[in-house]
Image (cartoon, rainbow, N blue to C red; front, side, top):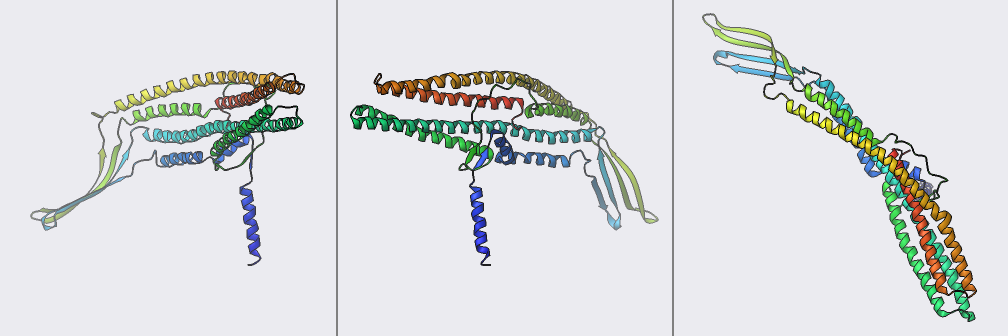
Length: 407
């Protein structure tokens, strides 16, 4: 037993270290992980079990009815009756009920698929938001490090007597500003990490290692039509359910008929012979007549509902076609914008800062020119990150409208 204690301690420590190990993610693995672990999605999957439970008892005959009757008079005269009544539909109501319950199960599954699809889009966006936030922190840290090195060289110049103390104060102020900005960007990174963790069904303090960067591809994907979209499939299935509901409402205009068997025993006095017993057996029918409640109003309601679902389905198809076209155009514009920053604007800003620092070292410009160039470079570097993030968010939207967010 004493030898088991160190082993248990080692197992506990190894489990704790494994639990705290950072989760390595890409955009695709994030989506796959979220679909398996998201809390809301796990709850939504019970909708399918609920629909299956409802379908289990649908489309069956109603339970038979037991009928009894007894009447007692003087001298043990009386009557006793017992019978069984079973109701049967005159139409194909049970078949339509079974078909409708099967459609309800499929609708529930598609509702879960739609939630998975929406979660995939949200998770992909949250992943790119986190990558962009970390790149922004890295850029700001790099700017702060350069500011520290520049401040150090100015301090050495002040000690040597050929640099101004005001310039040094300005450099220190710029350095402090950048360090404060790093901390504010870390807050944004923490918020982005928490949003991704919520999509993945993990705690806010979970640690992620992103194995993907916001590097632009060589070109944008080619335009293509939408594939399987859960919302469109759901709309089409709801339309089928509406058509079945019309058939069911027409089938229920005639209520079920009842067919029963009964036996009856009777004792009665028949003078002058006395008490005479008698036994009877028979068949009973119950046929409701649809005179006042003929179901025409319900049929009209279901027909109108089917027409509404058909119009909604057509509207959604039109909306999806427009979405696919629009989002691909937006994707192309975002790509060109991000490409301009990366290939032209950012490289020009870096060249400008190098030239400004060289000119300041030669005494050709004042330090304010250097600070303005540094500030401008910082703005452009952050704008470059935002442009690339906008492209990848547009890519996530485009993948979503194609219905391929969880592939």
